[in-house]
Image (cartoon, rainbow, N blue to C red; front, top):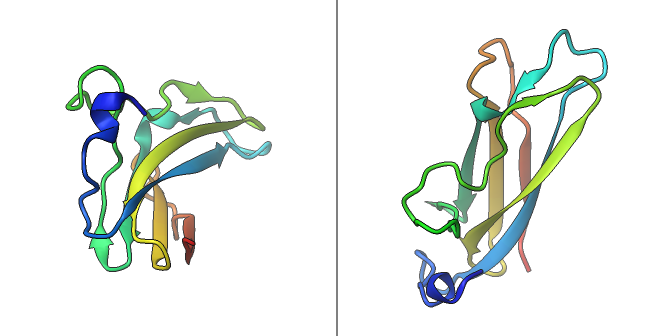
Length: 114
């Protein structure tokens, strides 16, 4: 995290910045490559929605941390996001595919951050 970003206060009182690794895998038996630009993340800390910090030169540049391009069948991609989380509360990360409306239930991580 750059100095300018680390000077920013997290947007929830008592929270700290936590780096979260997000891995998406396109199944080996998938019919086609997966468009990673269609990935959408919804993140909550406790009962508050939180947004990732960006560190890509311009804080308002959208999507600077997410992958772009296509993910071939049988391949995985991992990237990192940083979120403000209150220690001891529940962190929920929902990964949704905006391009696949047939997806019944999006993958969700739900756990306590220590």
